[in-house]
Each structure stands twice: as structure tokens, then as C-alpha cells.
Length: 121
Length: 108
Image 1 (cartoon, rainbow over the protein chains, first blue to last red):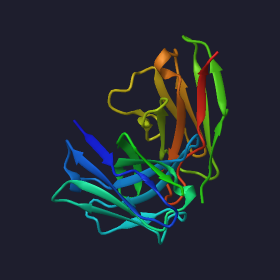
Image 2: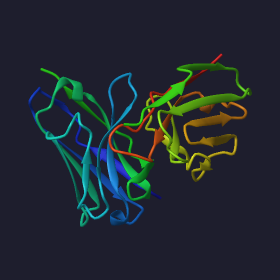
Image 3: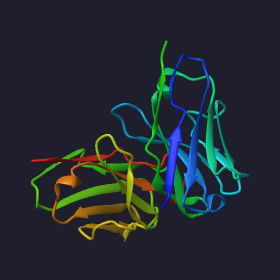
Image 4: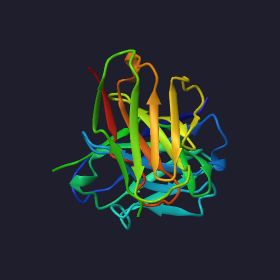
């Protein structure tokens, strides 16, 4: 059974940093690209970042480019999102998601439960 | 950049009735469209990919159709657990923006 356990969300001050983690199990981790998707309170879904299965290719939404870094550790089957220079508008539930489909023709076939990031002073 | 527009924003339906949701793309995306369901307080769940292929475990009352720029998600007989928000997602050309703004299906 595919499982994605996302964690690391917290209350952080503007300008601060936070690292999210997503522990994956039930599938061959390196076979799948992985992604982070966020949802601000009462709003829709916003794609944040993608990393290829090998980890060699990464993509970011313009809203987070230069501030967030996605990475993965294949030895631990874990996905990360390093979030720097956080802003109030980054407040959201962050979901880890596995990508299905083929390279750059991806859809989100499994989702974690989400972890809440609140940026506030 | 491709923009997805979902309509209506809110759909009021009685249990047992049929619901039809629309997703329109600003340019052709072939059949590279997925649909997701998000129940209150929960993570989204994949329902449909390839515009019309049901994901594993999805009941056959859910069906997707369309290609190019016009897509439809139909729910044939609404059950209580189907009242939720539904999102479409294009994967023909991304990044960056991939999701529609969502359609809320509420009890009439």
C-alpha cells in the first residue's frame, strides 16, 4: 500500500525557514517523480515544486523560486522541501504527492495527509 | 501558459441525482487531464486521468470525457460521500500553473 507521511509544519515568523519531510513507503521511491502542492486556507490547490525520480531535475512555481529547495534521499525514501525567506502568503497546508504518468506528463496519483505551515509574527 | 476554468463554481444537487462538472482549457491539452476529489479536511484524491480513465478503486459512477479544450466529469448518482470539491489538472504543459479553481458540489 502506498503511504506518504508528510511532516514538519509549524508556526514560523516571516523571513524564517522550515524544512518539510515526506516519508514514502509501499512503492519503489526512485521510480517516481515527487511533488509538493499547497493549499492556503479556504483556497484552491497550488503546485509548488517537482523533483524527478533520479533527483537530477527540479521545477518550481514562480511564487517560490529562489526561496524553496526540493530534494530527495533515496536511502531513506524521503522527500524534502526546504523553505527559506518565508512570507505570510506561504501560509498553507503542504501536501506531498507522488507523480504518475510519464516524464513531464505528470499527474498526482497519491497524496499525503498534509502538514500546516503558518507564517506569522 | 495554459489556464483551466472550471464551471460552475458551486453545484447544488440532490442525493441520487446526476452531477456534471466542466473544465475548459485555454488551449488544447489533448487528453492530458486529471480530476481530483477533495472532501472537507482531507487530502485530494485522484479520480480520473487521461481525461477518461478511472484511477484504482474509483467507483464507476464517476466518468470523465472530453479532449482538446473541453472536459467533463460526470457523477451518475450522487452519494453522501460525493459532496466535495472537485479540481481538474492539466498535464500537457507544465510547469507552472496546473489546477483549475475547483467546483464545490453541495447538497441541494
